[in-house]
Length: 365
Image (tube, rainbow, N blue to C red; front, top):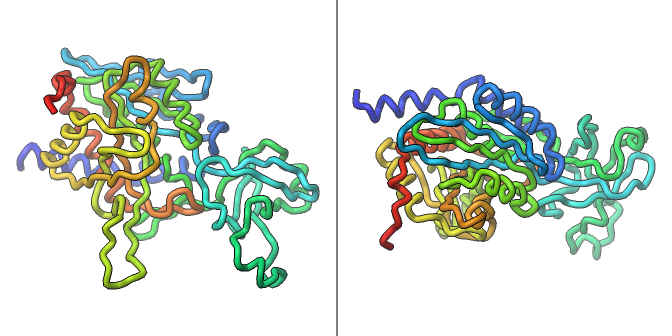
């Protein structure tokens, strides 16, 4: 058996019952931007035994350092954001009825009737609006606006929640054949992968792990974390939208797929916040090809990851993003393939083990 096949087969064992249970715990936690406490507690529990230094900064980022012992070490910051899109209660209408604002990028047209959980006690509720039976023909021609929606916690809800509490979708983690369905896969997948990388970080790097806050509202935590670490290389690990459903016209091919399920991790060349460092892109692609790991190039479009903040910090940090493709991002339920999740972790692990300072040699292009 060749060394490459040995690495590949051992890497495939990474995703098992323990790993799936941890991802489920992360996804089921409620950590809307600005109140990442639930996920932060899980992260601290998992990483403290693995690292020489762990701290929580003033923003709420978890900054964990695992120091290598090699002769040609590279300081690599890997960022995964702990927050998720969701809601904030902004108005108490009485009788457990609350007005709310959206936190992060959510399409308000798809909110009616969605079950939610509110606050750190996960109070159950539902997003409600006037039933279709009570609307006029004119009202049905336009999509509901946010101010027409309410979160309904029932008659006892006023004693269980208050203005300022966060709310999120109530979808529970579930496995569906080769797929996983859950809320907040963006970016609990990245959080999980970063924890796993800390468990087996190679000795040729200092792994500077940043579990960041407030990514969904402007990449805020990553900027602070990168300033603290001042790394040589920055990597954002995230989940990215897959636009791979069939087109309405059966005779047309979907050429605007962005990423696709079942095609492996998505390596970024450019998005709305970052143009990836070419040296890092080639390093990841060569690693994938050498290890027999499927990968795809994420097609450029708007949006961004924590790399958008990392690469502009201090004097600049060569940066790139690697993501797991996901259908239905920023909705009540995302969908991924287990194989894409596993291959993303395999790629990151293999690439880090190959890393040395030569990668930072200036590119001729």
